[in-house]
Length: 157
Length: 157
Length: 157
Length: 157
Image (cartoon, rainbow over all chains, first blue to last red; front, side):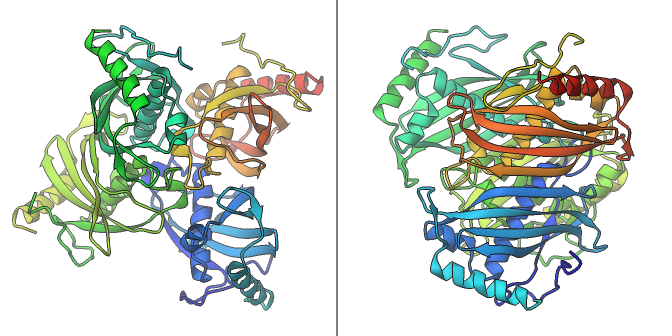
């Protein structure tokens, strides 16, 4: 895990393979009566990070969904390390994990973008489904971009 | 399902007509750091009340949606009277308000089902849209049931 | 309503009285099976707009809450004009409405930040409550900033 | 409340021990544009199941929170097996997993209460924190009830 540090990469249309940061402004509605962000919101933030990653990798989720495909979640795991409060400067950093013909994995780190304290980390695993919800192969143009991202990652990207 | 007519219930105070009650168990996730239920959740509860009303009126929302129609919200109003806490015994009481060929209104009261203290009340107004999101007339079988409910209300049911 | 056009103001620490824009990236979780953003999410976005307005007016909500005060919502109204889809470039524009010693009103417009098509507009009204949830006067330092904002607004700001 | 012991229920298949079932009515707001329940909602349902379990075990969460304690989530895992649609008869079945002086684990199964098809299963792990958010031992009266539940489970209850 020592190599898992999110790689600060210049944001641009060409970000692929690497870690994509997304700043989150905590919403008051996301807090609970313990005075901290409710743990279910992290899952929504993971998704926001994933969508930002796909946008940066040149495969916007609107295009994937527009073409009739979706990345259905099959597995979710989250480790909560430090509570998040309203006003905290939150950042989700998303990376591609495993990519196989039938499975895509994303890795997430939620951190304080100023102190870099880690609030939580986790992963989601996905299968590609068509508009009828049937499992299908990842379409070629998406697979190509994911392969490119995986290659960059393997090179230490 | 044809026997699941709206139950004319004499509710407290001035609530009359085919009022359909729905008990709500407050979820911890619905609280915020003020220690009360976040005001946006009431809108979700209004919807849950509306769905229960439609079920009771013999027009389950799953059937409406299954037939390719939806009741899109055009107007929302809510008056918040008393804060709701985790553990409070909440009940949403839903009634039909206006029903015209192009508009349906539902009226809501959120109350403590033991003390009958009113937490909030409000309304939503809707138009009927088809699966492409275009405004359309309320389909005959739904209009019939809405008219029946409106008649019961007019009779002071 | 003709004067209600959100006033494009240069974002800075000194924005007061005027319309404060906040860009929103629609989250996939915010859509529903009609393929559009669920109407309850607009209420959360209103709140995000309000928090941004307070920040811009020099009264961050974290400070207000930190001092033991909250702006509890008493009234909510929303008019839905056009459906919002995942990927739409959304912006909430927030302005101060009424400000009296016992009531604060915020006005919202949710629009497409490219086409300026209006998706929805509405308002919320608030009272100031202390940490025990009791209604109280708006604290002096906050009232001062609100008055300044109201004055700027009256001058056509 | 002292008579509200966890009910040892023989559930389908291998679900054993003090399994507490909770029926869930899917809310329209919980669906997404894939036409299924959004995966983040399962986390909220796990929590609802946990709260029902605690109520059944004679340790209502309102009392725990009222005494200044909370069960903060440290780990979350969910395996999604079948999509859930609006109208599906959902049930969350919650059991106690591990219970140690510093860790409590709950196990969940989300299933169709008619067909018993499993939609998802998972677990959450918790530490006990005081009102300042500091980790603390599980208070005696709660530990006692958890031990009793663990004993019932060990006896194959």
